[in-house]
Image 1 (cartoon, one colour):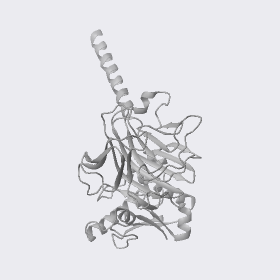
Image 2 (cartoon, rainbow, N blue to C red):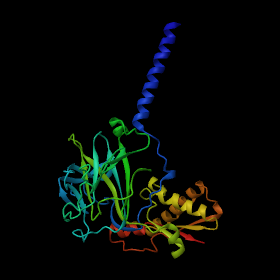
Image 3 (cartoon, rainbow, N blue to C red):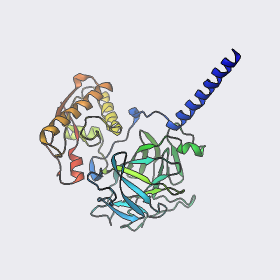
Image 4 (cartoon, helix red, strand yellow):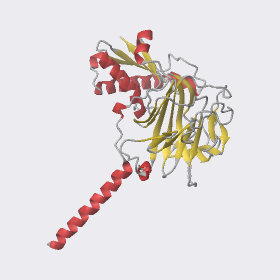
Length: 364
C-alpha cells in the first residue's frame, strides 16, 4: 500500500511540474477587451503580400541593407529576413513616392505581425528611411548613449531609448522571462501623436512614451538576432495617417468610417485587432445612450459582385452581434451590407482596396 501511495505522489508531482512548464511557455491568456489602439483612418501604405512569389524580393519594398525575400510559412505569404544589420540602417523600406522627404504626418499608426520562435530575436522599427533619407535629426541620448530613432520589439517586451516595458505576466527582473512564450505571432501596433509614442504587443500596451525626442520622418523595418542562424518573418503591414477622435467624426459626418475592423480572408470572422476600434465605439455608445448605429459593411472589387454582397452582409452582422455581446442593446443597432457598390478609393492599388474594405457606423 505504501508503494502504491508513493507512486501516486510521484505521478502527481510530475504532473504539477509539467503543468507549470506548459503554463510558463504559453504565457498569459490574451484578453482584447481593454485594447485601446485605434488604427489611422487614411492608409498611406498597405501590404498583405497578396500575389507575391516565393523566393522573390517583396514587390512593395526596397532594400536598405541585408538579404530579404518572400517566403511561405504555415501556408501564408510572409516577408523573410535572412540577414539584416539592424544596428545601422539595414532592413527594408516601403516603396513610397516621396520617400526622400519626410512622408510621415504628425499623427500616424503602424501595424504588422511578427513571428517569434527563438529566444533573443527582435524586430527593429527605425523612424527614418535607411536608404533614401539623411538622418538630419538623428539623436543619441547623452545620458545613456542609446539611439532614440528606433524601437526594438521582442516577443514580450518593447524598448525605446533606455525605456523597456514588458508584456503583462513577465517579470522584467528576469532575462529569461523575455522569451518564455511558446513560438507564435505577435500583432505589433504603434501609434505616434505629435510627440507621444505608444507600442502594443497583441492586446497589451507595453510602451507609453509621452515625449519622443526624435521626430519620425520615414520607416525602416529590420530584424536582429545576435546569435545568428535564424530568420525573422513579418506580414500584414499597414501604415496610416492618425485617426480623428470618434465623437468628432460622428458629429461632423453623422457616421464613423473605419478600416480598423479586420476579418479573416473571405470570411466574416473578426480578427482580434478589431477590438481596439470596437471597444472605443461601445464606450462612445455607453457614454451617449441616445446614440444608435446602423453597422454597414463594404468590400473591394476582388471576386464576384454577388459574393462580395453576401460577404459584406455577413461581416456587418458579425460586428453588430459582437457589439450586442459587449453590452449594447440590440434595439440600438442594425446591419446592412453594400458589397462593392460604393467604393471610396480606386481598387487599382492595395491601399485603395484596403480603404474600400471598411465598416461604417451610420447614426440613425
